[in-house]
Image (spheres, rainbow, N blue to C red):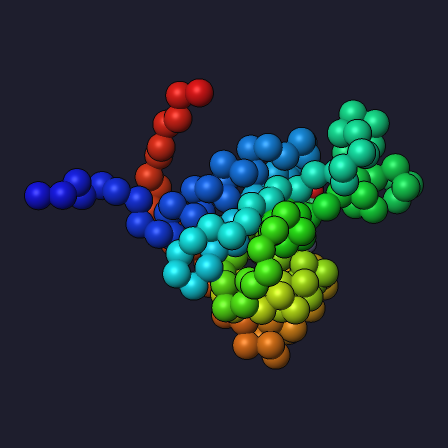
Length: 159
Ligand SMILES: Nc1nc(=O)n([C@H]2C[C@H](O)[C@@H](COP(=O)(O)O)O2)cc1CO
Ligand SMILES: [Zn+2]
């Protein structure tokens, strides 16, 4: 009989999004994204980080203060990086597994790329306008979104 405790598709792709988030240098919120085709092939990965050439050590990671001295004007979101990291030509009808609900700017890009479903782990900024605007656009565009159902499985990786 086959092994029973294998990873289901949702667990596999969310697990990869979580592992990708481990690359983030953001001290407050690490985000990972995994874009998957209709037939369950991984198309691209991303995590939140500073643009290429903008040193993680020189740019700010602050959340408050003069906007120019906070991370927000500089950091690339995980979803945007996953889209930009894609080297193929067609992500229509794909899905994205993301550890945090996409903001309005990332949702615009996801919609324009033809992504049809968002599976998210956390929605901690649901009360912010960026997330409300995001959901409005996703609803209009017919993009489905659903929260990942955690199964509280722990995987230990020895690296
Ligand atoms: N969906 C998202 N994807 C992301 O990659 N981010 C990034 C931007 C920041 O680096 C961090 C949020 O920082 P904080 O406000 O929780 O300290 O997560 C944020 C969101 C929220 O919409
Ligand atoms: Zn975003």
